[in-house]
Image (cartoon, rainbow, N blue to C red):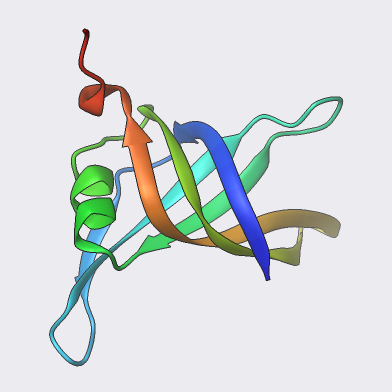
Length: 101
């Protein structure tokens, strides 16, 4: 398992869902720039109440930073191998949460 800290922009509006046990969670996709390469797509899922609330306050194109546990993923699209990352976000930081001192 990897400890991840990533920042980028949402590629679509986040979605709120509910587990079979009735607990709410949120999912999102984050486009993260990568030095000297194509941007990486990060699939984000959050179960912690504060992380869920922070993600659901965002919309497509908004910037955020996430911290959590991740694993590398890969798939083939149109014959081309793509790589990404799946992260269970424990913390989410957005510009809406920053207060001036």
